[in-house]
Amino acid sequence: MEMSVIYFSVKLVSAIYILHKVWAIIFCPVSYDFWDRLLRHARRIRVGLWRKRKKRMVEKAGKNSGKTFAGDSRGTTEKDGTGSPVRADNDTDDDVIGKTNIVYLEDPDMARRIPVRTMELEKVAIDQDEEINPDDVENGISSGNGLTESDRQDLMASEESIPDPEFSKPLTFEELNNVAEVLMSATDDRKNIQAAAETLYRLQDTDLFGFFSTEISTTAQVEKLLKEHLDSSGRLLSEMEVSKRNSKRNVIDWNKYM
Image (tube, rainbow, N blue to C red; front, side, top):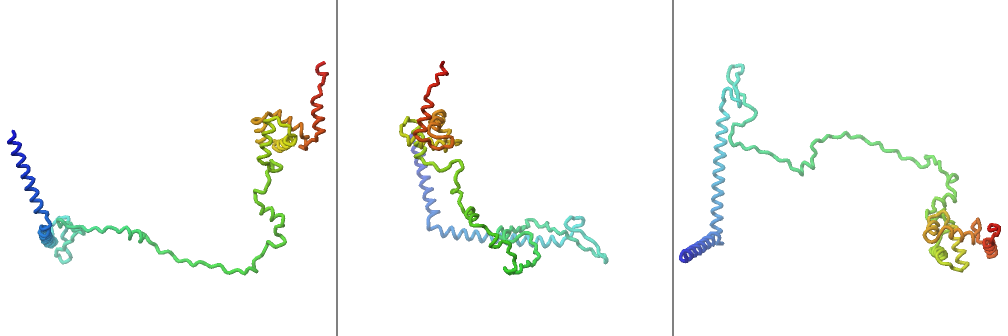
């Protein structure tokens, strides 16, 4: 068993060595000229065989074109007025075996530049308008019928300058913060309370008034604040008027309990 393994190994190494030498001889740089010469001779032989084959095909086509077969689909014989036969060949010459049909492919670039169907358009002269003198034009808008100064100011006024109809004057964050502080904390500052009452009066019928009445405080507390410090027209009450309202509110009607 060991001898067979050694024998097989020697044969394998020898085969690899021989193949390596053959490969080096065939594809070494020295043999490149030999392969080039062999390739040139092969090309010459192929071109010569192709020319001979083409010449035989042309000669065969010339011989077949001179023959006329009776009843053949390629050509028929007819007689003219003198009685001599006349050959009528078919338009298509398909009797040549191996005939090459040349097909010309359309160039895409040329097809894009040249339209398929072109029609020459009729040239129509365009009439030019005559020049009109400005003095001949009737001016219906005179200086007397133009816009007044107030109309110009209304047209040129920006939309940002138009006041919001919901507010008599703009409110600041300090005023809104003061309203929240008065409603959330029992402050004794009369000035802040009056300012909060005025702000709430201006916010009536708005979303902010509903926010203060439901989220910050209650509707009853907001109405109480307005009644104690403002009259029906929104004017601030004096200290005397406020004290009178509070005294009337604090008077106990004993008749209800008798």
